[in-house]
Amino acid sequence: MTTYRPMPEYQTGPMEVGDNLYAYLQWNGGWGISNAGFLVDDDGLLVIDALMAPSMTRDFVDTMRGVSQAPFRHLVNTHMHADHTNGNQFIKGAEIVAHQHCRDEMEAAEVLAAQQAATREAGDRGPKPFWIQQAWWDELAEVKSTLPQTTFQDSLTLRYGSTEAQLSHHGPAHTLGDSMVYFPDSKVLFSGDLAFFYAMPLCRGHMPNWVRICDIIRDMEIETIIPGHGPMGGKRELQDMQEFMQFMVDQTRDCFANGLSEEDAAKAIDIGDWAKWPEAERKEMNIANLYATYRAESNEASR
Ligand SMILES: [Zn+2]
Image 1 (cartoon, protein in one colour):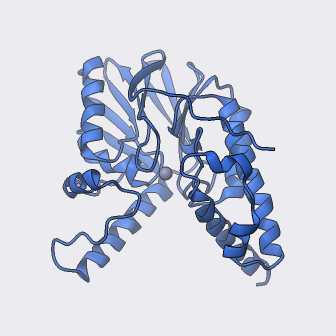
Image 2: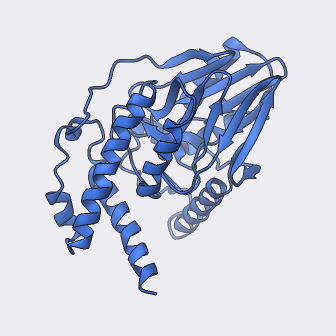
């Protein structure tokens, strides 16, 4: 049934994936360890995502500076998560571009953090989230929330010479404000966290719509996909992830319709070999997210 494949080894660092276009990968793609990318042009650099801990972003900036001294022109945030946006302040001079909902979600998180801090001692950052390693937590004290200045709704094209970077949004999926960045000349897609390769995807938005977006991507002319986490791949790896999500959507919908609790659904749903994926603890989080989706839909229907 399942399409489990073990993760191939890959290196942290840059990889040329198209004309003047680079992926920047981080092994092993686990919690907080995301991928980024950049396009080099004489007039400036387009950067895709900014990573999480300052040390990660500094290494990424050093890598880009090894290729080009041109100024940073744009930084695209593919979505609001800290492991893609914490580094924003270190991509100096770049105009930060994101989907409107990405900016809204970042702003809401900022307000929430400020409210929580106000109820605690000054200087107390509160409890460390379980998925953040201690060394990063210490570094993260220097991070200031840096919001996108420029937002879009459906699509936006950035032009670097004759090269187009096509940003698009297709509704809620991994989060509410996901963007992907497509380079038609090179047939390369930077998917952000719309793709997790060789690891369990995590849904904070709308998994049924995310499955639909996989179909949209599979219909595009694409040879290489740089996922938000994990090694580079293509449509085969995307299909592996889509099959898992379709399975979760179907199984969880049945459990919800039969009145099972979330806990019982987690016990009832056997994910087989997919349990060998890294971050398989996300199974329960995905079930909770799907239950919230189905609950909202049944409330909507009964109104
Ligand atoms: Zn994410």
